[in-house]
Image 1 (tube, protein in one colour):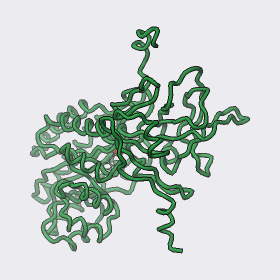
Image 2 (cartoon, helix red, strand yellow; image 1 turned 45 degrees about the horizontal axis):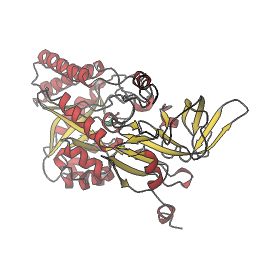
Image 3 (cartoon, protein in one colour; image 1 turned 45 degrees about the vertical axis):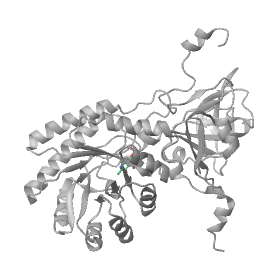
Image 4 (tube, protein in one colour; image 1 turned 90 degrees about the vertical axis):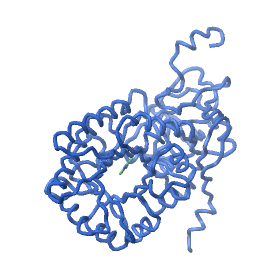
Length: 446
Ligand SMILES: Cc1ncc(COP(=O)(O)O)c(C=O)c1O
């Protein structure tokens, strides 16, 4: 490349900008840098495995949402905290003008500690306890999304003042994705179905409690949705449901929360939900549906999680061993695995992996990057191309691990959870420290 610089310009970038954080680039030693920091330095300082989050990537994507939907008349972007939440992340979301959605008292506490205005918090969950509802009410959360009849009664019992609520509705839209994240069809646990009048019955129950202020409906059709037209269809069905509620109860709902689920690419060639397209589909569907039902345009709320936090994150692993089994497959074993990334075993997720500590010179070979845990299925990436001279001590970076990694990590095999390190403008700092063996023992009551 030094001899023929034009070759470098013609070659595809080593770190595909569709998949890696916006600041990812190799330095002259071939080390992958994110947020201006060589990841090898982070591995040295914070040890591995480590989650690294590019603050600028997160903030940039949050801003893109606000910009893309700015044209819409009355909209709100609420960041889905379940994808990644720490007090710093909550602060970033707040500073970028986003609300935060939470689905437990723990997430609520983190959002509040991160300075999020309670009025901008949306509380979710299909099995909220009376205590969780009480805490949400006490904190003054802006919206509680009701998911069952008993929850309506619980909330009416604990509310101190008029509490704005939404009803979660399943609009019977199949995203044809993984079963675990297909949440818009009737045959799953969330929400009230439109079919058989469950949603209309829920509205009647809510309206019977004057302390509950029914402001709108909510739906979340699933995750990794690539086709914006599905959101258009959801809007049509939800506006029709709102018109039914007006016809039956004389109430005009003013808010429609269409959830999140916007797809991001994990490996080259994966499709991404186009944000500009989504904004157009929302506008068109709203215009048509509201005109058809003679219904006033409600405020639209979207709840993206991974589309904001996913690509900001990379996970660092140290190579522990490289071996080729008699079946012919080469396994690169690393010092993390399904405890820090359960998505491979849960959803068969695929990942992009790169050598992060040096130039990847010479031949490549197809390998499986395997974890350290006691299961043959503990793999991070299968059949990925990595340098043939990969050796113990090398550093690997796995892209797109900002969402549902830190938040889904476990202590399987009594392994402490990794640190979460923020990088920005050449500086790295711990957002969450590594879990120690002392931490693990401290919960064991003997
Ligand atoms: C109600 C709700 N909103 C938003 C999201 C965020 O989904 P994603 O991270 O795929 O955007 C989820 C994910 O489970 C959800 O359940």
